[in-house]
Image (tube, rainbow, N blue to C red; front, side, top):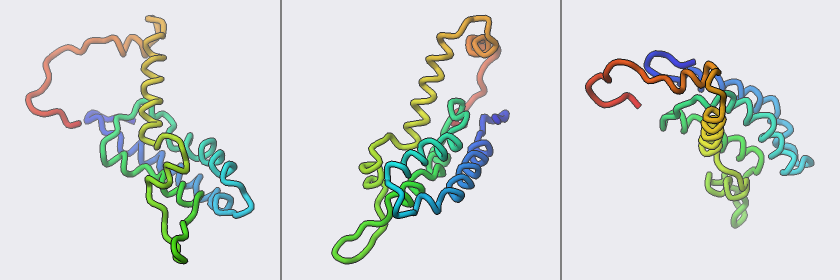
Length: 148
């Protein structure tokens, strides 16, 4: 829910908490060795990511909000550690995204926002959301740099 300062951090935090609960409910299955990596990736893409990105078409992400999205934690759980020279280490983010072979969560949200904008442009002009989109605000902007 947006407020007068256009701050959506609380909404994003609610989505992150809901997705985190979903992740912890599935963690046993995501760490399971008999379960294939493709099944784990499908579980993430179909069960956890939609919970996290619900209504993200309306989000204006700041750097802080982008960093709080926890996709790499889930991917580390799915792909596990890497063994090099007899020692185990945690995979780096770039390694995870090479294996995952999908856009990261921030790019995924940006693509959803563009899709929503295209949908909005194609709407009938009598729809309320289209009327709001086409409205020109009255008055002048305040002096100074915008908050975002």
